[in-house]
Image (cartoon, helix red, strand yellow):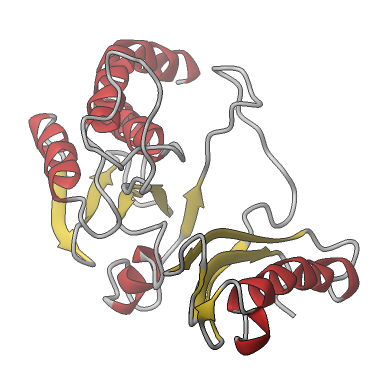
Length: 268
């Protein structure tokens, strides 16, 4: 059956590439993946695959049944959403949506899983059991489509079988698959901090409480949490990607807003 899988993969390769490029050119933000979901659902139905739409808003679940009787249940998972980033690449399929880009590979994840589903469907007489294709919305934004899908009991209560996820990386050449024992994908907690001070004219710093300076110290000081509170053997990353203030070159603002992410393998 390995050779049949390889042949099936070759047959859907062009379609997978076309889907990936279409999704890359038409990215949608978290929980707004309406056109993305419709495009994927259309491709699945064209192949004769049963698909359920509107799961956790814009999610999809396709169900494949093998023809060799009963067997295990496996769910394959991919994510649909893009990021609020302006694409600077100059490609024929670059993002057509200002300020939105598939910068994390979810277009590839979705296209790859669609291809896997097409191959499994074509070879359904050669395997037994059930395979579900779970297209998750809102991976980039809390509370996250995964938790919402579980809350809706989209895979049963409790979910049956195993769930398999994957993520592309430019560190591996095309065609290679990497495996890693133990935990591999970190948890991600979003951080929202508001530093409140007392604004005023920049020429009179003695009359203000400068939230910009406080925020600068806060950003550098919080990095010590990683180096001094996290166990050295537990990978932990604290990053701040957005700092906003309503001041000016000569005006110290009343407050500064800080946004970031804490990723960890050990949440203690």
